[in-house]
Structure formats: C-alpha cells, structure tokens
Image (cartoon, rainbow, N blue to C red; front, side):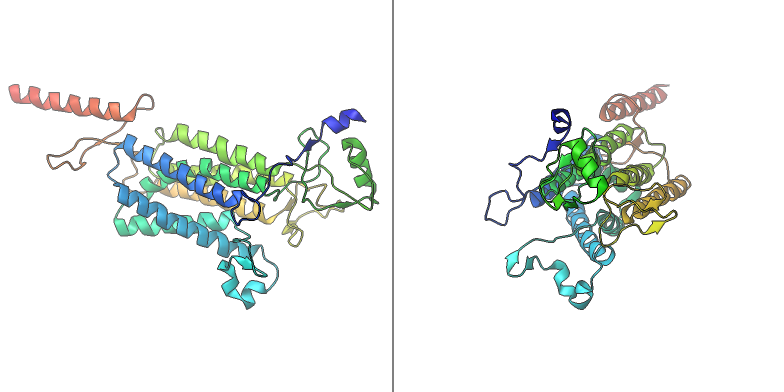
Amino acid sequence: MLIPMLLTIPYPSWLKPEIIPGLPLRWYGLMYLVAFGIAYLLFRRQVKERRFPMGEDEIYGLFFWGIIGLLLGARIFSTLVYETSDIYRLRPWLIFWPFRDGRFTGLMGMSYHGGAIGGTLAVIIYTAVRRYSFREIGDMVAVCIPLGYTFGRLGNFINAELYGRVTAGPLGMIFPRAAPLPAGEAWVRELAEQTGAALGGAWVNLPRHPSQLYEALFEGVILWAILWLCRNRKPFKGFLIGLYFIGYGFFRFFIEYFREPDEDLGYRIELVRNSLPAALSHPPLSFSTGQILSFGMIVFGVVWIVIASRLPGREAIRVYGDEDPAGNRTGFAAGGPGGKMAEAADKTAERNRRRKLRRRLR
C-alpha cells in the first residue's frame, strides 16, 4: 500500500492563488505581467540583433496595442465559446466587470485561442498604420510568445485549475479543488486502491494529470526553443508565423487528450460514442472545443505558409545592413545560419566597400 502512495504527488499546500492573503493580488495576474515582460525583452533583442529600423516608442506601441487586442480577444471569445449560460448575452457589461457579489474576482475566464485572434489582428492593424512589414514583425512576435505563455500556464497551475483527467501514473497529482468523484463507482474505487487515495465517504479526490505543466513545457518552452533556433534560418518572411500556429496547434491538440473537457461543454464532436466518464477516458475519436480550435490553428498555419512562400518580397531578410550618411538603414545583408547576425552584416558591408574601392583604383 505504501508503493502506490509514493506514486501520487500531493499538490503543494503552500501554493495559494493570492500573493498576499486578503488582498486582491493574485499570482495569475502577476504571471501575465511576467509573460508580457519576457515577450518584450525577446522582441527587443531581435530588433537589436537584426538592426531592425524600429525605435523604442514603436516597440512600446506595438506591445501596448497587441496586449489590448489579446486581452479583448481572450475575454470576448471566452464568453462567446465557453460560457453556456445567457448571463453575458443578457448583461454584456459583465464581460469586463471584475467584481462578483461585491468582491473583486478579476476577469474569470480567458481563452487562449481568442487571445491569439485578437493579438494577431492588433499586430496587423498596427503594422499597417505604421507601414511596417507584417510578415517581418509577425515573425519576431511569434518567436516571443511561447516563452511568455509558459508563465500563463504556471498561473493556471497555481490556481489549481484546468487540471487533467484522472490517472494512476507516476505524474498524477491531487488538486485540492478538483471535482470529487463518487466512491460508489467501481472504477473510482479501483483507482483509489491503485493510488492510495483515502475512501472515507461518498466522494473521493483522485490524482489527475498536471496538464497545465504539460502545456507549459510543450506549448511553451519546447515550442519557443524550436522557433528561437529557426529565427535565423527561416526560408522566407512570414514562415515563423505559420510555424508558430502549426506548432502550438499540434502540441495543444494532443495534450487535450490528457485534459478533462469542460463539464458543461463535453465533446463537441463524437465520431464514436463512449460510455466511460470524461474524467477517466478521452476517446481518440472524440474532440473537445480546444482540439477543434487547435486543429483550425494548424490548418491556418499551413495555408499561411503556402501563401507567404509565394508573396512578393518573400526573401528572408535577416539583418538590416548599411547606413546612409543620415543614419538611416538602407541596405540589407542576409546573415548566415551560424554566427552572430550583426557581425555577418558588418563583414558583408566591409567586403562591398572594398570591392567599390578596387573598382575605382582600376
């Protein structure tokens, strides 16, 4: 009986949603700020290493409007897709009202897919108004997002929300606020015995997959590493935008098999009916809302890559090169796959100057 107990990871009792108990400051909100800060620093680094002609004010403006679009899209999409009641249709002002029953609750319910749509539209509009190339800016933004997203999922973990399905595996974790399961069910008693969960009443809390951490790892750290390594090796402008959508959609689609679908939504598509409870089993041919939206992201990413590869001016300009006498960036120099891009640009510019000098001496 001791061995199964060792295979269950207790949720850290010291983790609380509030940073300071009694005050409306939550770790989830702080994680959003950390995510935005990391994305900003990564974007700024790319601007510097590529010598991209974009000043600090323009970067601030891009992130300001991008964050506004992200938050609006995430909140509105959540209320439209994941809320099954008519509360927001009847009282739409509650969509952005952070109080419930006289107490501060924040904006409860944010959709990642809605945030992706809102943020993308904001970047498209900003680049159009400022006359920047959306493909170039979008590639740099796409590289930044996953590492910031990691902290958003860590916020979900601290909130003990969006947990996964029941499991008897070694990574199972007992979340304190997970929905208890009826102890009278045979499969519940069997899993309780396997995991060492206490059966002392009509309901029991069983270990679940920490799917928030799975997403933080694969949709966050690993996807970011892939995009970061590809940022100097992209075949054409706009490629990283499509790769991001494909990568996120792919990882999220399969991790959804470890997550329990929303109780009020269930599976949106069930090609084969299954009698097992959703907390225990996710049939391969049953698809949740998150999987449908993630599949849509994959399709969009593939279509975008095909289109971007055929657009004019698709060359992968990686480093902005020479400066004219006024200090404006004019030429372009493609940095090689290895080495520092700025050094490659300087060497290319120097070779060009030497060629011009030799021609004059002749």
